[in-house]
Structure formats: C-alpha cells, structure tokens
Length: 95
Picture (cartoon, helix red, strand yellow):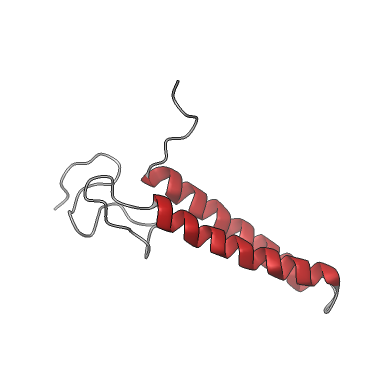
C-alpha cells in the first residue's frame, strides 16, 4: 500500500509553504488582538512554534533526490539542484 504522501522534495516544499503562510496569518492576528493579553502571548508563541516547524520540515524533506544536498535557501523557488544541476521534478540535467 502506497502512503498518501511520498516524503519527497515536492512534499517538503508544499509543507514549508503552508507552514510559512499559516505562521504569517497567526502573526498578523496577534497584532490585531489587544496588546498584553493572553491571546496575543499565545499567538506569538504559536508563530514561533510554526517557524521552528518550518525549519524542521525544510531540514528533513527539502533535499535533492539525486545527490542528497539540502536545499534550504530559496526552497520555494528552486527548480534545479545547485550541486548536481538536475531538475528537482523530472531528474534531467539542466543547463
């Protein structure tokens, strides 16, 4: 039986994007609630936890499937591996 999601670069990229968007939403909501309230403290803590989760997802799943190099910077726009210069979706060499 195949897993619902393959733990690949595309999965890591998608999860990182969702976590960043959700942390930005929680951060903006924390700015809208009254200052010094418990809700604001909880939302700020949730923002920090979501950003740490984003870093963990990027560290664990965002690597080239061909050479194994971690792609942390620019993971949302990366189309090819900076080390082996292969396409991250098709695996063909990119010039």
